[in-house]
Length: 136
Image (cartoon, rainbow, N blue to C red; front, top):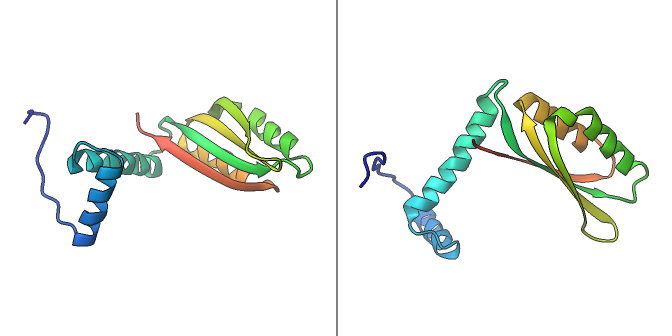
């Protein structure tokens, strides 16, 4: 075992172990340890997001909306222009005749990304907003 890896013990209920083993098999992880390391990276990113002040964060905001709602495209674009400092890229996809999805790649302070997501959530016609932040 490498010097930069520590071995720890983890106690879990049997049902969690069975579920973990199923995920390890389904997602083709090399081991339970690799699956748990992957999960911990998400856990750490969430913690950093919630506890960091003005540190830079990177991630995406996914917006699903009804494109037939009057003015929704203009409203989305206005907010994106007003908060352009936090947005590095935008992708627009037509999911169906009625529904579109936009993916915003974001970078900035937690407060700015939260403000952007909340402004998007408040728009009529927006059905879902999902924020995904990644660690550096």
